[in-house]
Length: 242
Length: 247
Image 1 (tube, each protein chain N blue to C red):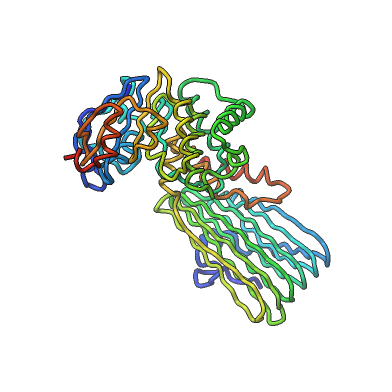
Image 2: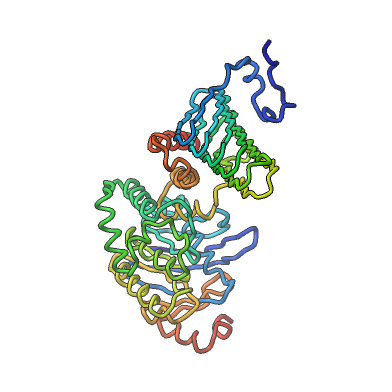
């Protein structure tokens, strides 16, 4: 028997496009990846056509994994990561979502440190225009034994129109007592003085905005094997919005 | 070149400029001096088209063209440069990328061919060198982590690269030590003292005028020019203060 489709009462689906989720239900089983002890893994996910991606990732002892996400396409796009870190493992997420019109885009992560000495770092940048909605729900759970966990989340959203919506919920659930967990979250608009400065030097308003947005998302894909492709695709999408 | 006639402007519904009239011809350097709150910076912003500045009366022509009809980037392409009193920090955007895009946008607007990366770097290196600025600084994000003096120097490097016809320099001398003041003054003379160019220097103090000799000095008080004269007026102001002269 399959599970019933989620509703808005389910926290992880609270801001979703429920009609689109129901249409896609039941979802196939999540992609499951196990990175063996000492291994290295990297994957890029470009959500370009309105799909739901679910990925379970278990990172073995002293292994590393990096996930890069560009979430830009379709009316509803969702990328869900469920990450488990073992002793001394390292997880890195660099995610950008760029939405316009009536798009609903979301990135949901659950990062669980089940054993000590693991590190995780998540950077998420959203740029939202029109009446689009961009959501990041990011939970970091640290088990009782996972001492010396070092985890950080940096979440920023830029609204290009007052009608766009950004939801951001970095969440910590910590049962160990010797851990370092940092999280920062900011939602803002482009600095009007910065835009004027660029325009006063000759850039047309759209180009000035694009340059500032490029700076906003730059760095997120640093280290990705296909960094250039990701930046190019992000810039193309930004160009459609400004 | 620039003709301002009876200019009135409001900021947040408050009148700041109240009938300002001023003309600059090519080859001239004009200094505008005046007390705090007289409207000096407002004049610079109104001329460069900053949003939020409402022009209620008067007109401004720049080489015969109605300046107030143009967007800020069109004014830049037409040859107007504003040197900011507080240059803005733009994290993540490198000076080099920003200036190349800005310069090429201006060239494109004027129908000139854009500069290649190598051609641009040559110009940038020359200008940075002439102003004693390290090329490494030019590769860093725009003004981020720059000291007050470095920001002003960067404004002058930008002016050198863009090579405008008219520069409005808003307190470019503030925040500079004596050596930097001389460097910046030399830069203004080198870049702008030419038969086909003009400068409007907005300043509080005489000291920049020791390096950049103005042809005309004006006193701006309460939103209009209350007195105009030659370089001797600046010395008079320095001696007697604004109160005496603005009255």
